[in-house]
Image 1 (cartoon, rainbow over the protein chains, first blue to last red):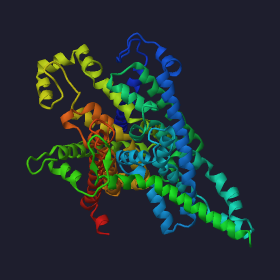
Image 2 (cartoon, helix red, strand yellow):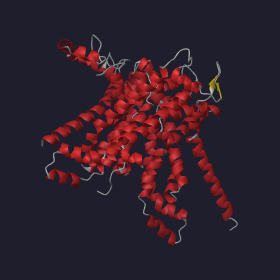
Image 3 (cartoon, rainbow over the protein chains, first blue to last red):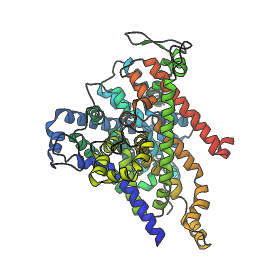
Length: 266
Length: 314
C-alpha cells in the first residue's frame, strides 16, 4: 500500500514538473499588460486576437511555419517510402547504407547540419527562400517516416505477398492491394511525427532562414532577446494544442505503444 | 518485349536519380562543412577554398600561437561537454524509475502518458526556455514568489541564503537563477526528459511481469527487484540512452543563449556567431562544428567501451 502511494506520488511530481513550465507559458498569455507576469495580471484574451488576427508579424510567421511543416513532412514521407520499401524487399547492403545516410541529418547534432545547409543553399543562391527551408526540413526529418514505415512493413506477412504472386498478381498490384491499405496508419504517423517536429524545429530554420521569412520559433527567439511579450505565449499554446491533438490522433488511429517499440504480444 | 526494356531503363534512371537526390541533400551539407573547415577567411569578403590547418590550430591554441596561447575555444568545448554530460545523466537517472513504474500500468494509461510526453517532447526548445525563463527570471517567477510568501526572509534568517550563494544560485538579496549553471543544466535536462522516456520505454516494457512476480513471491522487495533484476537487464539501453541524449545536447543553442553566462558559453553559440552571426568566419565556424562532431563520436565510442565491455569487444 505504502509502495503504491509513494510511486503514485513520484509519478505525480514528474507530471507536474513536465507540465509546469508549459502551464506557466499558457497562463502568461492571459496577461493584460505588455510584460510577462506569472500569475497573470489583469487577465484578458486580447493576445489571442493579436496573434491570429491583428499582428502581421505573427500571422506571417505562423503561415511560414505551417507551409514548411506541411511541405517538409510531405516530402519526407515521399522520400522515405521508396527507401523503406527497398529495405524491406531487398534488405541488401546498398539499401541499408542508403537508409543510414538518409537518417544522418537527424542523428547528428542539428547545428552541424544547419552549418552545412548554409553553405549548400548559399552555393545554389537560394539561402533565405522558403522552399529551401522546406527541403531542409524534409532532409532533416526523413528519418522519422522511414522509421515508422519500417516498423509497419515488418508487421506485414510476407506469405500474403507470395500468395498474391502465385495467383498472378504483379508486384504493383500486390503493393496496391496488400501493402498500401495496411501501411496507411504508419504513413500517417510518419507524416505527423515529421510535421510536428518540423513545426517546432528551431536551429536549422534559424540557420537557413532570412529576414524575408521566419517561422514562429525563430520569431519567438528573436523577440526573446528584446524581452517577452504575452503574445508569444499564444504561439506556444497553439503549438502545444496542435501537438497534443496530433499525437492523440496517432494514438487513436494507430498503435502508439507499438510505434514506439513496446512489446506487442500482450 | 520491345516495350519492357525502355520501361526498365526509365525505372532504373528514376531510381538512380532518387538515390542521387537523397545523397545530395543528406550528405553534401556535411561534406561541405568538412571541406570548408580547411578553407581561409578573406577579410571583408566571404571565404576561399584552401587546405590548411589554421582554423584547427586556432581552435586549440589560438590564432596568435606561438606568441600567445588562447584556450578560449577549448573552454567553450569543455562547457558544451560539461552541460551535456550533467543534463543527460540527470535526465536518465530520474526518468528510469518513472518509466519503470509507467510500464507496470495498464495499456491505456501508458498510451495517455506517451501522448503527454510526445507532446512535450516535440515542444520547441524555444518554448521550453520561455517557460523556464518566466519561472526563473529575477523579476517574475520563483524569485518573486519566494519574496512574496516570505521564503526569502526565512532563507536569510536561517543562513541558507549564504549556502545558496556559495552554490552560485543566490545574490545577497534573493535567490537568483539567471544566469547560472544550475538553470542551464536544469533546462537542458528538462529538454531531453521526454526523449529519455521514449527511449527507455521499449526495453522496460518488454520485461514481463511473471519474472517480477516470481522474485516478489520469493520475498524480494520492490527496490531489490529493480536493483537485482531490472537494472542488469536494461544496462545497455540505459548507457545507450545517456550517450544519445548527451550527443543531442551538445548542440543546444537557445538554453545556452538565455541561461548561461557569456563566459560560460558553449561551442554551438560560437559556431552560429562564426557562420551567420557577428564574427562571420565561415571556415572557422566549420572547423568548430567538425570538432564538435568528432568529440561526439569519440565520446560515443569511449562510452561504449567503458560501460558496455562485452559490446566493445565484438
